[in-house]
Image 1 (spheres, rainbow, N blue to C red):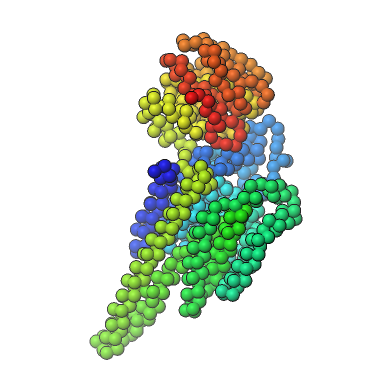
Image 2 (image 1 turned 90 degrees about the vertical axis):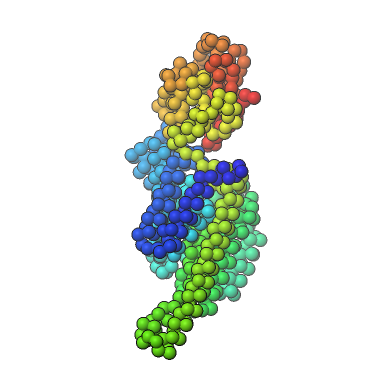
Amino acid sequence: MEAFSNMTVYLILLAVIAVTGIFLTEIKPNRVKRIIYVSAVFLSLILLSAFRYGIGNDYFSYINTFQLINDINTPHPTQGEISYEPLFTLLTRFIGLFTQNTEVYTAVYSICALVPAGFAVYLYSKRPMISCFTYVCFAFFYMTMNFTRQAIAVSIILLGWKFLRDRKIIPAMLIIIAAAGFHYSALIMIPIYFLAALKPRPLLIGIEAAAAALAFIFSDKLITLAAKLLGGKYEEYLSSEFVLEGLSPVYVILPVLIFAAVYGTYLVKNKHGDAETEDNIFANLMFYQAVIWIFMTKHSIMERFAYYPFVFSVLALPAAVQYIESLISDRKGLDEINRKMAETEELTVEWLDLMRLSVRQKHKMRRGKAVYALSLLAICGVSLWYNSYIGSAGFYGAHGVFPYQTNILSVRKKGMEMLSPIQRDRMLSAVDSTIDFLLLAADDDYTVIVSTKGEYTRFLDNTFLRAYRLRGFEGNFPEHRTGTAVIAVSEEFGEPALYERYSGGEFSAQFNMDYGKIEITSSSRKNGKSSIIVCGKEYSSNEEGMNIVVIRTETGEVIDSVNISSNVNPHINSHFTE
């Protein structure tokens, strides 16, 4: 039940993709329906990605990068110390020319990651519903909320399918270079471009598999050699968990199944003389992605390389399914029968024979549709299993996007308004979301006290500030940046704060409330002091960041005391009141 609630938004999304896809692209499909369907699906994905908050393992890291590249909320210029891919840096600086709003920045990159993929599905997919459904289930959508740079690179590579398929080397290389402008790992597509053109005969696949097995055995040495040749930050990866540890072998099941399905289809097409360049490339790409996923069980960093060939599964699977349906239905035979009947005089012996063939042909067509329906159910079933698995992996699922959270405060606050005072008290000490904590605390029954220590502004974004200001605080953190401490006290929701002061160094304030004395100390130094004493008892954790104490105003009972760290973690570090 908990896993379901964590994935509710995504499951509703998948249900809508499937149902609307059947009506718009499977029943009497046409170009207009295709445009409407693909546009609606990817617009929904863009909105979900753009209006998210605090989800995606790298969410706050990218916000920090945006601020650093554009010197927002930083005490000293830092651009000379930043090293990112050129197109990513250029686009980030370009956005910074027009806005400092991190939500706009997030939305722009969501558009950049999803629009090319949407165009690719519209242009190239033989069955858009399967492509859209698998795009979400296979985690490409979740990537856009985590691996932002790489998600854009993968999307650009997918959009370049025409050049890869048609062996247009110059445009293909330009596409790969453009993708590498957002993430250098896209350069793996250069050798893949040349290897994918080979005929994937069983002998060749066997030789490549043997070579891959040998490389797998000596992968530690090969990665060490590659890192030393590249030098710089790549050598630092050698001691990281991404190189030393692998992911669960369960992740390999889906890639291997996809390779088996696509390669099996290629062998059938080749036997019937129907195989084309596209089929060769699909079969090779699915083999390479399966091999890379297998390497990922030993070195998790390989996951980043796997996505480039893996993304073509959203095109390869629909193509395979459509061919199998067409083969069983014998569509070529139907076309030939219809042509002969049009040329034959009615009620002749030849015409009657053709009629009998036509009846048998209709039975084949029904069998073909039945096989397609079963294939569709199998793809959706396996995809949903994989989506469920990655949604339950770890504490916040794959890519850290489970459960979904939005930066639209009115949506998040609505559910909290229904809570009773007792429920609110209990949730305050249990909730692990910074924003949800602030929204719970923004209630007229609570007094909210803020003390800071050292750095506390670095990762405070627009959504945090809006939630903080709901309590009546001015929240002028961006103006003060680092080097200042703050003491703030709000006694009543909807009214200006009782006290809010920013100052350098260390300073204190005292208040006599109806229920007793409050003494607060804040410091701008890491080795300074953060103190919140209520009726003679200390409640501040005295940790770096923002320390907040919530008191029930009527009784003076301390309901909760938390520390919101200034590190990248989007969640509250610790609750201190039992």
